[in-house]
Image 1 (cartoon, rainbow, N blue to C red):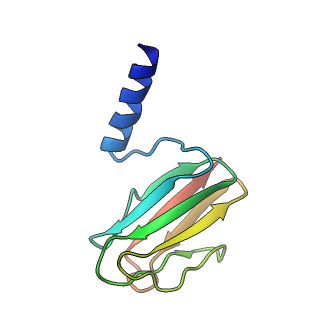
Image 2 (tube, rainbow, N blue to C red):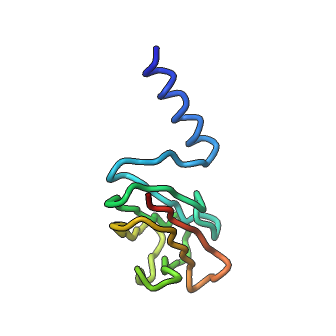
Length: 106
């Protein structure tokens, strides 16, 4: 019963767009309709985050503080970065600067 409740709670969080704290791998942000979804992700240190471009337009994923920088990510392609240290990392798409997001690493 307890496992079913935990699974149900995790599914509800994902459905509402509030990401649960994932393990070391498997966290994703989708780029769709000129937005990063979810706009904020919380990870454990040592986790890798993958951004997947679901748009037909190219986008970039560029850290505001210079920690990471993707090349143009075309539709259907992805970019990954491994976050080693705790902190809050803001990023934008340099092609469309109104697009922004953040990664919180614990």
